[in-house]
Length: 406
Image (cartoon, rainbow, N blue to C red; front, side, top):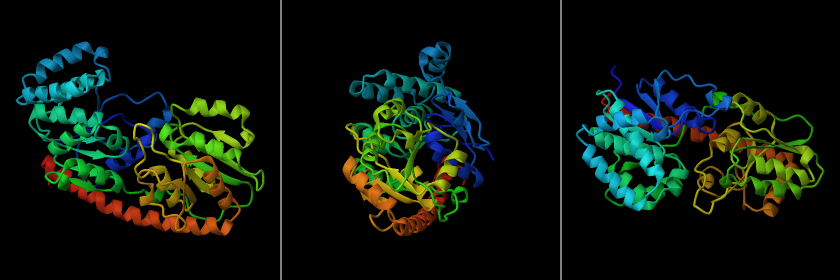
């Protein structure tokens, strides 16, 4: 079968976006063929490359045009001969007036490189994330005179300007969204003429990799958080909440995840009363994450909405903790209330130290409550996984039709 589909991602592989890798592997297992284009090389973190089995070829575009001026110049000349270049150039000029940034120029340049390098049999481009990958896919598809689509997740939905989203939604063949809150926002921006193009297609959970649900042996209560150290995860709030806990029953907290705030979190341990109970492990391969999920008692994620509007969708780490049968404490930010109902399959609290500390204390002192919430969380995860199984079939069919593989 001829490959007629190109999928654009920001970087590949990325340890914080294993849900994308899992989805791509599922699409391949269903017979879908595609090429993969990344807007940047993977970072130096060795954990980024762990565990993917994709057969698709991967093309890496220069992240900065100044790093490959000859490639850009040649691609510009090639792209300028394409039938839709003038349309893409006009769109870029309109965008530039509203967003006169180096990032905007870089995305148009990357689109030129992509459009000039794609084989002629490519009929459709699909982007993961509506912001920068969506811009590259949109410009390149216009140059080539083909269709494009996108999968929207979290930050791209909530921090991209309304005008940018609305125009992308009007031009995309379809947009898949993995959380209901995001779908509602995008359908509102799309308006009545284009709202039907927005689909709620949640990710499928890989339950075969979920640690078995079982009673934990005695010992200190193991609190676990798997999250990037970025503002929307609320990790400084959690550190403050831990200050308010009692020394008994004995407990420990482990954070798995790298990010811009990790050094700041480490520095704050210098005067933390329970520093000897806290481990900040940075990013880890998924095998290590599963080991910690299997050993944990409570999963905590104090997510919040940041000043620029960024928030979580349905955090995949939270869903994995639920699948592992952990009692989970989270907040009502973003799409979290779509998967956690307070007191039924987890605890929802405010992203503030005092109520978060009280919620943690309550679960630490009540093993029966932890067990009940954990079993209910695992059942919810199975339901969500079944939804995701149906959704991946819908996505695969939409991509087949767009790429002419049906």
